[in-house]
Amino acid sequence: MTEHEIIEGCRKGDAAAQRELYERYAATMMGVCCRYARDRAMAEDLLHDGFLNIYANVGKFRGEGSFEGWCRRIFINTALGAIRRTGMVYEPEESFARLDSGEADMVERMSGEELLEMIRTLPDGYRTILNLYAVEGYSHREIGEMLGISECTSRSQYSRARTRLMEMLK
Image 1 (cartoon, rainbow, N blue to C red):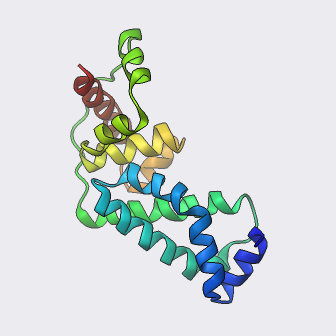
Image 2: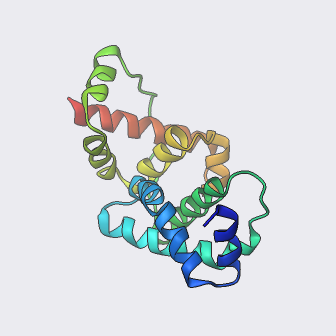
């Protein structure tokens, strides 16, 4: 099936098209879910809920930009909604951390799975902002608007997440 056929099939509620959509994007979207989730079970719940949201809203896809990008945004919003419902904690500001060359070398030597496991241990607020800023590429202003926090709080949470990761590396 082409992407267009999958989208049209999902708009009509066709189970074969929905299955094809799932098979095509589940692995990629599970990666998104794992970055926001505390553990594998939460990631699986987010994956399930994200696909339900896509199936329910596929009629709103207007073809502007990539379909995969649109799906990614649905999954990010699903994850943010789950985090909001669980009560994300933001802590006060602290000074900004910088990666020195030794710390950067340590990160480069780690496997992706090792780094993901470290990120999963971060508090919800730290993990969420780290993902939105460093992985998804949102600005601190955009993150603040998405989460209902100040730009300054977003910056400090990102800084604290980096500091905490660096402490784990040592």
